Length: 230
Image (cartoon, rainbow, N blue to C red):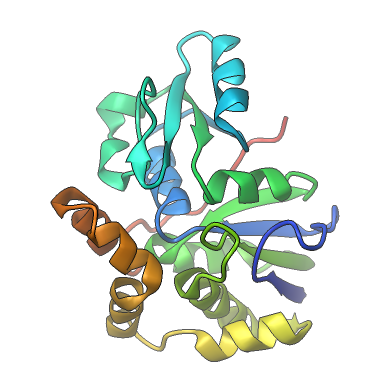
């Protein structure tokens, strides 16, 4: 197995023969993992709000989901808070999802043979699902075009675990990510809470602080999910 890391999406293509793992710890891939765990039928990422509205208009019963500057978009059904994505709200439905960072990263990864959602809440399940992959590209969503420590550290956790199973890490970004990987659940919690993304979100108020706490939990959702193709 070959494992590469993209510290930000869009600077280089995702190889079409790879399994792409898209990571937006705070909060998109955490929220979407929860959505699938609670029975969402499909997620369609949209890079822009206008694209999301257009897609949803052509899918009966679809929910418009996403945020800008951390807060739900006016007129949307759901924002980007993991606890919003309950079974009662999303079970059996298609979600058109347009977050600031995670959705464009998911669109960027569309050429891959498969797109997996990863965050700390399901990182061990993702590692297990990747064990038979021949080529893996870990795509960090970043924060508005900037490096996000929690995304890179999560990529590093996955890269390190795969390396321990015999994978070959390719490139400086993969080596850096592996070095930044936290060593324990306590380290994950401290990193997510202490990073710029976590601090910025907590400044928006109590419910957002709860989101950061949710995103800082290791392996609370023991399942890995892929976006359906097409």
